[in-house]
Image 1 (cartoon, rainbow, N blue to C red):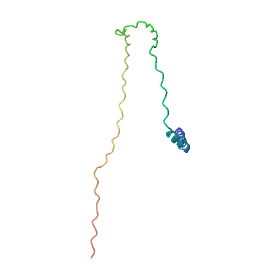
Image 2 (cartoon, rainbow, N blue to C red; image 1 turned 90 degrees about the horizontal axis):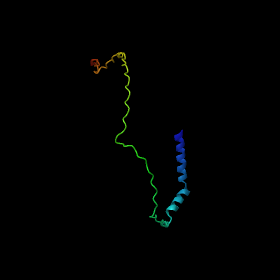
Image 3 (tube, rainbow, N blue to C red; image 1 turned 60 degrees about the vertical axis):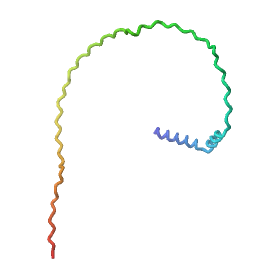
Image 4 (cartoon, rainbow, N blue to C red; image 1 turned 135 degrees about the vertical axis):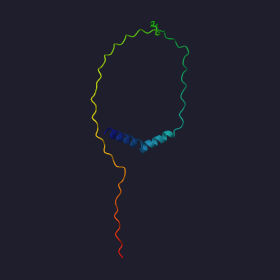
Length: 111
């Protein structure tokens, strides 16, 4: 149902843009004379004041990380044995040779 709503929305937008007024307006915009150039922006001042730098605390040395705690041993899980699966019945084989069809001899010709 949502895709139907999107289809209707796309159809409405297509109909809106296909109207003659929009086409004429677009043509008029394309036929405008070149616009005047933008005025020059003021240059950036070169004497920008510097901000004070905060003092950071000393960080620990990253080359010697603290030792990690040892992981606990996982308990052993008893092995689960499943009963054997029942055997599947054998599939019947399909004959690959075509048996010959017996033809009767033609009746004797009568003179």
